Structures are given as structure tokens and as C-alpha cells.
Length: 306
Ligand SMILES: Nc1nc2c(ncn2[C@@H]2O[C@H](COP(=O)(O)OP(=O)(O)O)[C@@H](O)[C@H]2O)c(=O)[nH]1
Ligand SMILES: [Mg+2]
Ligand SMILES: [Zn+2]
Image (cartoon, rainbow, N blue to C red; front, side, top):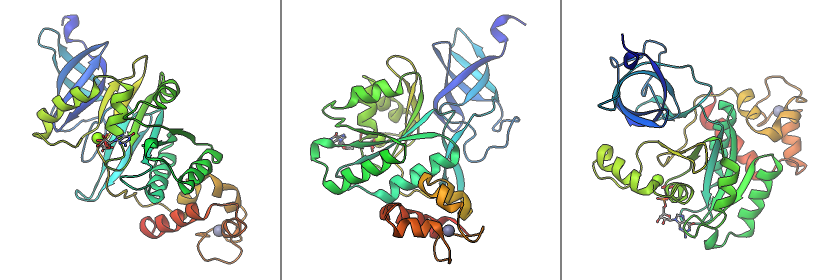
């Protein structure tokens, strides 16, 4: 065997079905998945996602290759795909998830933001909040919510992606990291990506033509190089954030402000909704837990827990 046939470790930038773009030492290869399944792990719906590390055998001249195995994941951001009734991995091996919201169009939706933060906490991925479209003038209510997130320990950014305002702060904070941008459709993920990584929009256009058959909205996640070092991954707009079933204890643990009071509830099985001696509810009633956050908790409890 020559060296060219040796297994090489690469990273998935994007891809759907059975063809992936894999980068190995600054060179991109179009790679196929050997067989339709990977023997190393049972992964449903989509075997591989941007950020996944894979072993490939490549043809240097053709810039093509065959993926033979996936390396274990450090973490993954998985959402429940209600259409397919299966978990869908959006991206893997992440250092930071930035949840985007917009001041307006679409209107600020705290429920979505909280569900995304819960999903990040559950996956063990650090999260931050980006409030985009600052040029549309954030109101007091939205600014108050941002202050709540900051007090909970999330990094909070405000920006106007179209005007490139506040973008350099995000660039600085994401250097060397693998970062996933998530948020509802229309909040400005792709616009922000393009502000962070000049030229990304044109590339997305090419990819859309290739994979999307001309659709304008991003239908798949794709990783791009941070201008200095790191990866920025744009994700498809998610309309509804369905979470996989959590236990009430797991769900409340994903709300940092509930951890300490939850440890003092009278019943260890407390769902923090109606039980006597609930210290989480007491903290909400005392104004320590923000009413919007408690409301998000109750809605998620209702929707995601048995
Ligand atoms: N006013 C304003 N519009 C923006 C801003 N960022 C993005 N948009 C617009 O919002 C729309 C959706 O942006 P897009 O990046 O495609 O959102 P995505 O679905 O989250 O990727 C587009 O018309 C953008 O031009 C911003 O900072 N201010
Ligand atoms: Mg987009
Ligand atoms: Zn309780």
C-alpha cells in the first residue's frame, strides 16, 4: 500500500445523503460514505454532520475519497425532527452555540431562545445569545431579557449583521472555537455568517444550487473557516424547537437559576409546577427567577416530559 491509501483524519464541512465535503490539512475532498451506514456507531437519520471527524481514504489527484469510519464525538447538537420522527444531528464537536434572536421581523420570541439554550445545556455545549437587527431598535422588554441571560452567565451580544455593527466583538469571542449559529428562520444567521466570514454567502449560494435545487433558504448546516482560526457553522432555520423527552429533573437542571432551589424542594420528584414545598416556585414568586424563564420552563415541561 502506498501512503496515498493510508487512512487520514479529516473534518466534515457539509454534505447531505451520501456525499460529504471533508477537509484534511487545508484541502477539501468530496467523499462518499462507505456503504450507507457507519460500522463504528449506530446513528440515525443522518450519520454525519458538520464538525464530525472522520477517517478517509483519499485520491489526491481527483480530490475525492471514501469515509470509512467516524471518530467518537465530543458532543453534538441534536434536534428532534418532527417530520421524520427521528433525531437529527445539526453539528458535532462544538465549543459554543450562539442562539440568535432578532429585535423584530421575526418578533423576539423568548420561548424559542430558552428552548435552544436548554438544548445546549442538555448537550453540554456552552451557549451565548446574539440579539441581531439592533438597527430596528430593541425595546425595553427585550433589553431586560438580555440582562437576565447575562446574569445567568450566558455571553450576550448585540449586533446589526447588515450594517456590520457589533460583529467584531463576535469575531473576537469566537476565535479558535467551533461555533454553531442557531435560531428561527429570518433572524439573520446567514447574514451574520457572511459578516463574520466574507464570501460565505457566495459559497452558500453554490451549495444551495448543488444540494437544494435552487431554494434560497439554507436547508442544511455548513461549516466555514473563521477568518483567523476556528469554524463557524450556519444551520437551517428551525421553525419549531422540539426537544427530546427529558425528565423534569433534567429539564430544570438545564435552567441554571433553578439548580440551587431545586435541590431544596420538599419532594425529590418535584416537577416545580404545583407541588407543595417547591423552592423553585418560591424563587419565582419571590422574583428571583424571571417570570418569562419560569413560563418557558413550564411550557417545555408540558411539551417534552412524560
Ligand atoms: N434590519 C436588519 N435586517 C437584517 C439584519 N440581518 C439580517 N437581516 C435581514 O433579515 C432577513 C433574513 O436574514 P437571513 O440571514 O437570511 O436569516 P436566516 O434565516 O437566519 O439565515 C434578510 O432579509 C436579511 O437582509 C440586520 O441586522 N438588520
Ligand atoms: Mg440562513
Ligand atoms: Zn420544586
